[in-house]
Length: 270
Image 1 (cartoon, rainbow, N blue to C red):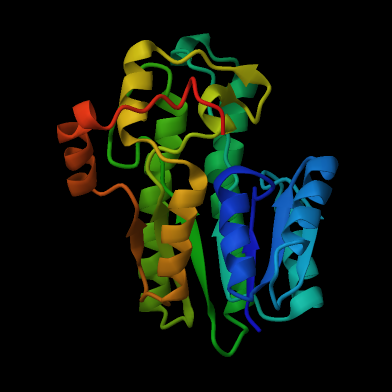
Image 2 (image 1 turned 180 degrees about the horizontal axis):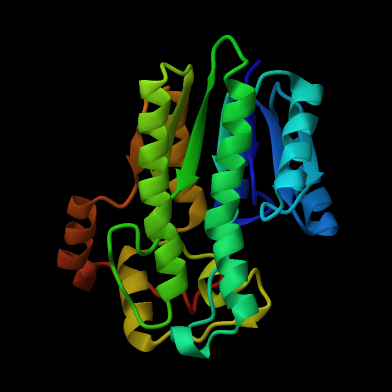
C-alpha cells in the first residue's frame, strides 16, 4: 500500500488532497502546527472510507529538526513514502515591503520557501534509500510566473523561488540518476481562508475590489482543484512534472465568458 506525506494539510488544498488520496486507498500522514486542528482533520479523514491508515504529526516546516521527526514518524509507521508534498504555506499582510516587520518577512520566507527546501531535502535523503525512490511535489503560487502585485512582494518572491528550486532539484536528481523525482503543482487561484488571512490566520486581509473581481473570474474551491491535481499525481508522471490546473487557455476562456458566469465567492456561503 502506498503512502503520502502532505505538510500543511489540516485545511484548504492540503486537506482536500488528503481526502482524495484517502479515497484512493493510500496511507496518509498529514501535518500541521495546531494540535486541535490536526486532531480534527485526522478524525475527519478516518471517517472517509478508504483502505489505508491515517496519521497526523505536529511539526513546523520552518524547523529542519521537526521535519526530520515528521519523516522518521512516517517511515516508522508506514515504511517507504511514495509521495511527499510540501504544501504548507502562509500569505503575507497586504502591505508594501517597507511596511512589513522583520518577523512578518521571516514568517513568509521560512514557511513558504525554506519549508519546501528543507522538506525536499529530508524527502530526498530518505527516498534515495528506497528501491522505488519516490516523488516530491512543491506548490507554485502567485509570482511563480513573474506576476506582481502591491502587497504580495514577499509571497510572490517565495513562490518564484519555489519554481526555480524545484526545476533545479529535478535536474539534479536526473543528473545523479536518482530514483527520486521532483515536480510542481500549480493550483491557480483558490478561495480559502488563506485568501483573506495573512500569516496563517494572524491577520485579516482586506482585498481590493479589483482583486476580488479577478478572483471571482479565475478562482475555484480547493476540492475542485484537488480532484485534478491528485488525479494527475496518481497517474505517475515523469521527472519534472508541472501539473497545472489554471492553464493560460483556461484563464483566457474564463475572462471571455465572465459576463455569463456570474460568481461572488466573497458573499456566498459554502
